[in-house]
Structures are given as structure tokens and as C-alpha cells.
Amino acid sequence: MPGLNISAVPPAYLGVWQRTLLTTTGGTHDTSTRVYWLQTERLFADLRIPLPAPETPEALANQAGFAGLTEITGDICQWHRAIDFQPPNGGEDIGRMHFVDSEKVLEDGLDGSYHEVWERLPESLGRNRGTWLLGADGRQGCLLLAGDCFLFAAGRRLPLPHAPSLAALLDSGNTELLDFELSFGRHQGGVAPWRIELSTLPARIGARLLPSDADPDHPELLRDTHWLNSLGATPPAGGWKACERPLYPDKEVTP
Image 1 (tube, rainbow, N blue to C red):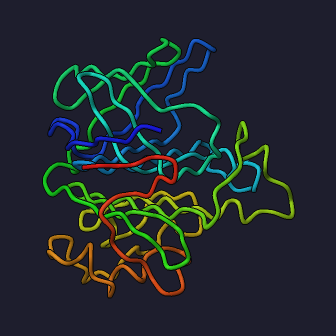
Image 2: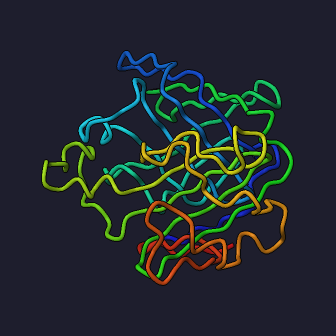
């Protein structure tokens, strides 16, 4: 496959965007799913939790989220997913973007099949950085910061086979397929520092991603194994290490 030539995204995209509306030509009209997209200069992570809050394995399998590299050419935005809560289905994640103003952007499918409205969280302006993570057990993940917000992702050890959905792969004896963490929160302005507010792992809600003394502005925070190795519900044995970019086995990625 051709390589990915990824440049820094325009500054207008940086921050956390909350989806406030999804409509599709199939009749979907969704304003309740909690969706956050955190964008840094190159890396992104996206978390999508339906309401009511999922509790059963079947309901948890309907969550969504992914992370990787963002590529923007003109008004076309493509999200190259390196890790994905849902299994691969052969499709690509590409939309046409239109900024209504600096804090609101509209996304439309290239085929016109969907329309989304995104609004930027004001507390996500300011600091903007992140790091891609590689676990000693082969997992990939990331920790991204935007303003007062964070989004942490930790993928699975083994990739999923192609399938229409995670629910199609799930059975009562294989709930480990749900072991994919995407956790969103605020590191200072929330109820407590680094408190997780929303997660694909419900038991993580209310937990701390990092200790309260972890300074989001410390220059070594995103590369220091002292902090990185504690990340996640199940940190990899041998820890996480920071790496330059996601790994795509079927693509060559260049900066």
C-alpha cells in the first residue's frame, strides 16, 4: 500500500470536539451518544459511548472509539486508525469538513451518507500535545492532552478479524474482546485531578488516570516511564514506552 505522508494538521483543528448531532441517510438522528474527538498536531483519539450507559457485555460491545494519525488535505480529513475498539470492516474514515466558525465544524461523508456537528470544548484550548505508546506486550496506545482535557487509549494485544461489528464476534466465553480502554477526563478542572469521566471500561469511571501530582506541563510527563508505566486498567508487564508514531503493519508512515 502507498505510504502515509502525514503533516501537522492546521491549528484550527486542535482541541477536543464534542459531537452534538449525527444524521444519516438511513434515518439515524442521534444527539445522545457521548462522543469526544481529541486532536493534537498529528495524533487523535475518539471515544463514543451510547446512552443509556452500557452495562451488559452486549451493550458494551456497541461502544466505539479509535486512535491514530490524522491527515488533512484541503477540506478533506482522514483519520488513519491504528487501534480501534470495533473490528475492521474494510472501510476508511474520511469526511469533508466545513468550519461554521472557530468553535463549530460540520463533517459530511464524501458520499453524503452522514452529517455530523462538532463543537469545541472551551476548556480544551491551550496546551496541546501527546505521545504514542507501545507496550512491552505488543499493545499500542496513546496519551493526549488538550487544554485541561486528556484522552488515554490502550488497544488489544491481538488484532480482531474483519467483521461487521464487535457484537458479531462476542460470545459469553470471550468477553476479553471488551478489554480495550479509552478514557476521557480533565486533569485539573474536574472533580479531582486526572479523574476519568467517561470510559469504555465502566469500572474506570471515577478512577485517576495519573496521581494528582503529575504535572501536565512537565516536559517529561509524556515520555517518563515513571508515569507511563502506571497508565491504564491493565498496564503492560514491562511497561509502556513512548514512540514517534503509530505502527501500521500494512502502511509506511512518513512525517
